[in-house]
Length: 342
Ligand code: 6XA
Ligand code: ZN
Image 1 (spheres, protein in one colour):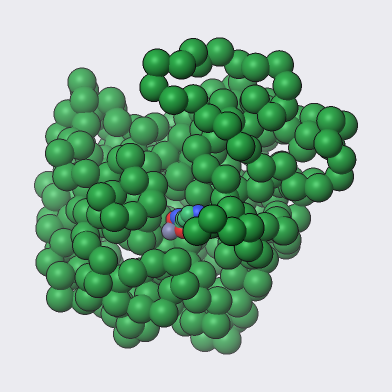
Image 2: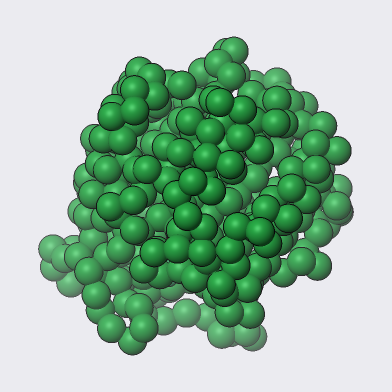
C-alpha cells in the first residue's frame, strides 16, 4: 500500500491546549506522525510519496471561502495584535446571541471555533494545506485504480466543519477527499469514521446529502467530546435522510461491543452501495490512550482492517487521532496490514 506523507506536518507544533481546566502541552504533536511514518517503513508497507499541490479549489468544495480565508490570515492578525505566540479562542456564541463576524481577531477565533484545544500557530496554514494535499494526492491514486492508499495526514480533520475548526482539526481532510471522489465521477461515497471521537465536522458537511454516507463509531456524546453531536437519532436530513449513522458507545467499550457496532456499520455501508470508501482512521480507541476511554488492544486493529477490506471497495485511509504516541504506529499500521491480509 502506498503512503502519502509530507514533512510540513511539523509546522503545526502548538505549545499548549486547555484541557481539564489546565493549559497543558498539546497532545496533538508532531511526534505522532513521525512514529506512524517510522512504523510504515519498519513493516515495509510500501512506497512513501510526497503530496502534489491541489490549491484552494478542492478545499472550498466543502469549506466556506470566508472560513478558509480566516484560517489563512488568522495567525498574522493574532500576531499583529498580541505577539508571536499561539492563538487560542476564549469566547463563543451562546444560543440566541448574534452570529455576526467581529472585526478583531479574538472575536473571529470564537466565531469560527468550538473549543480552546486547537491552537493556531505560525505554521498552521502551511501544515493544514499540506495535510489536505496529502489526502487529495492519496485520493487521486485510489481514483486512478489503487485498491487502497494511506494518507498520513497531520493535522487531523474530522472535527472541522464547513465553517468551523476545533478538536485539533482545521480543514476536513476526509471530507475534502470524499468530495474529490464525487467530483472525479464516483456516484456515491461512504465515509467510515473509527476515531474515538465523533466526526462532527464530516457529519455536518454531508448531513443533507444523499450521495455521501457518513457512519461513525465513537464515545457517547453524553460522556465525551465533542458532546453536542453524535447521537444515534441523527440520521441525516432532506436528501441525506437515512445517510448518516452514529454508533455512540459508552466509556469502557472493549472489542466485543465495538465489533458488534462495526459489523452493523459495515453492513449499513454495504447496503448504500458506494463506489469508494474513505476511512477516518483514528486509533485513540486504544486502551492506553491518554484522553480516551475505550479498551481496544493492538491486535484489534488488525481485525478492523480485515473487516473493512471485506467491503471490497477502493479505499482511502485518512489519519485522524491517537495520542498513545509509543503505540500509535503499531495500531494505525495494524489496520492497514489487516486490510491487506483481508
Ligand atoms: C478535547 C479532545 C479533542 C479530541 C481530538 C480528537 N480537547 N479527535 O482526537 O478525534
Ligand atoms: Zn479522536
